[in-house]
Image 1 (cartoon, rainbow, N blue to C red):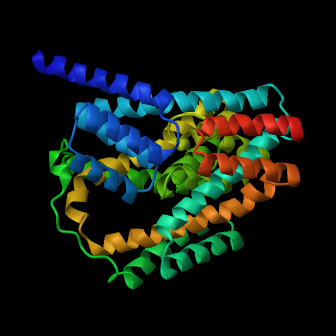
Image 2 (cartoon, rainbow, N blue to C red):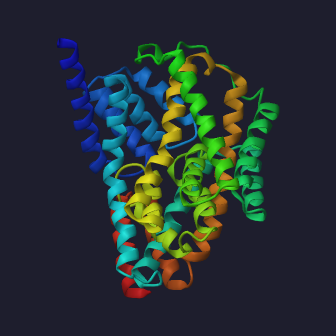
Length: 398
């Protein structure tokens, strides 16, 4: 009974701690990782600094929402599989619910996407994405070769707009990294901090990895051959959750290709939702909840939310097991260095079209975008205040 009580107590601790973070963790994935470190390493002492750093490294090397994956791993470490589920639900549910409600409001209230306050949110998206591109370029495309990879990747996806182009660019970048960067990174030799984290069995890791590939491949095949609402939506969100490297902002170009291009929602509504996603706490991937709500109501929002996060959960389970074995591979490190550079190019392409082309239509919208960038980059204002200002300014000026 003592073991059962302790397990229930640990799950309850996960629920309480991630529930609080789910409504207070503003600022995007980098800020979330800071919140997690303060809460679970410094204050609650669930694990050591080194173990936390290695969990973050696993998430950075995998596609998907890094902060959510770190949260899942922390929940698993504290309370097993139920703790992993509890951490994801409590951290994700608040922003998913808010964005789904916003999407339903836009659709059911008959709000015109051309209204001034929505145009203000589109201008805010210009500032947000520009800030993200600049920051990522500074860290991920800061050499001649990585900058070249970023530029070529961005030009390719603009020239050939297709989800398959995104996938091809990511694969090609990984190959280029292995070939051209193999001598650039020194191999690390220190022990892995994951030795202190609750272990994931070989069977669970293999099953998770197999489910990931079966899920992705089966849904893409089903969507292209059978079609229908359920298969096409599941395939789109699973694909987005499986192929996005570099954090929440990078999901924008792929989701735009997968949802706007087929006509599931209008471009202006898509960008308004993306801008609104900056104003809520929790993971940016819950932007999919907004799209799902616009496209299919509450059922669509739930489907989109689960489908876009499921691949990252499966990959994180496998990653926790295999990371200690693979983390020293110079080939893996160089491949992901190049992939991260390509991700900068993908986001840069999205900044050009659709963000800038729809967000700045004159001097008034340019002014709103510029002021929003100043607030984010220089004054370090919270994102929710930027979104509120942009909506009010758009209502007045646009």
